[in-house]
Structure formats: C-alpha cells, structure tokens
Image (cartoon, rainbow, N blue to C red):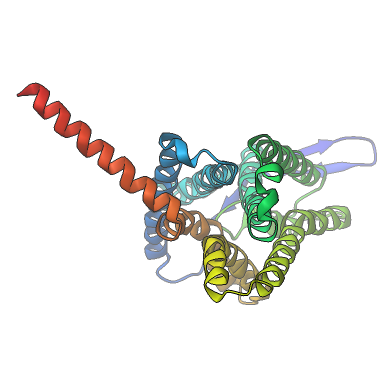
Length: 318
C-alpha cells in the first residue's frame, strides 16, 4: 500500500505484518507455558482487586496503588497473551497495518504503567519509613488518586505520540520476529530516515523506564539511610519487612529488562522479552498475597465471614 502525503513524500505501507516466533525449536511448549502464566495472572490479579474492594480496612492510599498495579497487570497480560495464543492455536500470524499499531499502543501503554505504579508504591514506602509522623498528611487518598490519574494520562499521551511516528515512515519488510508488534524491531525495517523515531524512542524509554528506576533507587537509598539511624535492630527489621514485597516487585520487573538489553542472541532476547511482559503480572499478586501481612489478614477475615454466613444460612434452612 502506497500513500502520497505530498509531491515529494511517498509512504510505503505493507498491507499486513507477519508476527510470531520463528526458528525456535519446540516453541509450542513455550506457548503452553505462556498460557499457564496468563491464567495465573488473570486469576491472581482479579483476586487481589476483589480482596481490596471487599475489605474496607484495605481502602488506604497504599492499596489504591496496589489495586491499580493489579489492574494494569491484568490489562497488560490480556493485551499480549491472547494474540500469542491466536498465532499458535489458530495459525493467524498476519496482522493488518492498522491493527498492528493499535495492538502496539495498548501493549506499550499498559506495560508502561507498571514501573510508574512501582514509583507510587516507593513514594508510599519512603514517607512511611523515612517520615512516619507525616504519613497521614503526605500520603492521602486524593493525592494517590491524582498521582495515578497523572500517570495514566502520561502513558496514554506519550504512547499515542510514539505510535503515531512510524505511520509517517516507509517499510521495506513486513516480518516482525516477535510475539507482538515491537516498536524497535519495526524501526529496523524502515526504508527512509528514522532518526527522529529512534531519538523519540530512547527519550520515552528514559522517561517511562529509567527515570522511574532512578527514583525508586533514590527512595530506597534514603530509606536505608533512615533505618541506619534507628538504634534498635528489631525496629529496623520490622520497618524493612514492610518494604520486602515492593522490593520483590521492583526486582521482578527491572532485572529481566536489563537482561533483555544485555542479551545478544536474537532468540534468547525474544524469549526473555515475552517473559518480561508476562512474568511480573503473574508474580505480583502472588507476592502481595504471601508477603503482605494486611492482605493475609484480610483473606483470613473474608474466609471467616464466608464460613459464618454459610453456617447462618444452614441454621435458617433447618
């Protein structure tokens, strides 16, 4: 498909792109593995959101951010994995030009919310540990809602801008050796000048990925400094335990990304990229349920209430 925007500008657009893993042995087993991760992700994040909604004691600013993290994880995994299953189960590797960029927008928008949610949670931990006397004033429902709304607006606007750039360039090939319409891989098939797109891509990576990581590391540097001033060892350990779940989420999200950037082998990079996209959304709810004391107490409380209601119903029936 060829489009003329002016007398001197001709844009060559393929009718469709071909996506999917190629030249990777036994890839069908990996598709099954991704399917299992997706099922666990959907169930786990749904459970976390339901628990937070049902238990009024969890309706705090911190758990507003946790709810949004689970919501973003659910959306990101749902944007990615069903297309992978469609490619594998129904042999549909073709995706139209417009659908490809729509797919790209939702994938990057939802995935970009994960590090920003971690920023919100790191701010919560910074104030809770570093400035405990000011926590009720500095961390409020209104403030957390405003921060999350700002993050959503930011990722939507930035992603729309980034995705609109490749629509003004020509493509020499239409084969994307990835599990989704990968922005970087698609720029490698560009025929005309794509320097602006590359520069914008690096700038967006800094704003949505590396700056959040720098902020999180700065927060925990101060938290470590604040804890070093606490005389009692037990108090240090108690305060640090409140950060373990969040630190686990940070490690699960950023370490695979760093490995992806360092990996040279194309197939290994593709496998690691898919795990980077799906693994955090699968493990995040498990970590919060198992490592967060408030969530565990809430689950026990909700189970007791359900058990009592069943007993009451049986007595009424009898």
